[in-house]
Length: 350
Figure (cartoon, rainbow, N blue to C red):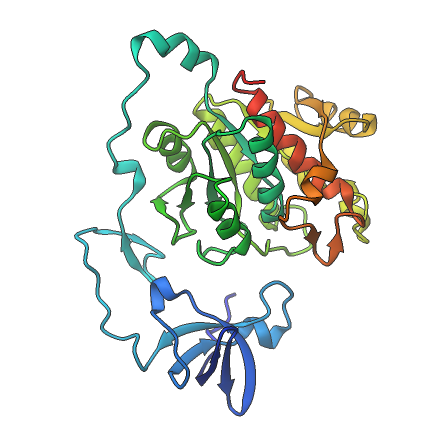
């Protein structure tokens, strides 16, 4: 059973970082300004206080629901009639990327090369895999057009991720599609399979990283967690006959036994997949190869890939996960580095 919204009035007392005074308490907050508009000191707002009151980790802040001072009567300058967050108080119209005319296909003389270098997809189990995978792909093939499809399983707002903003600024990602129910990306898609198809046919991406936004959800059960979205993403890619690489959730430093080595999240996805995928693993881990090969239908291919952990450490991109540094948990970062490098190899490039 769902709980009621925990909505409370407050006043913005700081914009950067955003803080709201709620009943005399100064509280951390976040506002999706694409939806609710600009925040200024002194604005009266309504915040959803549930996450902070519950003491959640990555989601431990209030979320601005509406700005009563300047956020009303915004309207839209669009004739779009398809909704995201439909039938909620935050429903808003979008132009689905699936409905956009596709880019020109390859010229006749390029057809053989194009088919040999078919766009590939790397499925990410966590948002923390995005930066290492994008960096590794760029190192393996400078100039590659790799984009990101954001799915369910973590944060839904497309504007929340600092990692994504950094990757776009540095040119390591060429675009961002938010697939329903996520929203607010540079392009909007109504389904994950629609997003992947549009990434290839409409936007002309060379390769795709697909996975959840920050702050994966979980319930300490076998299937009730955001990591299960990798199953849906892999099936979407496979249904389009795109080469599909799975970036496994690995850890050498997680205090929880179920996430050490090959995480139970990835093991469950491998058990449930209806068709084989390639699982990129860092070189020198034969125990992982045997776990992958024996999972589920028994046809998954574990492929060892050399990774440049030192190079990534010097890149200036994120090197912490859940409070653990790269040196505390190198295996966590090695997995997406392997997947990013393997993503390029799937398209026939060096």
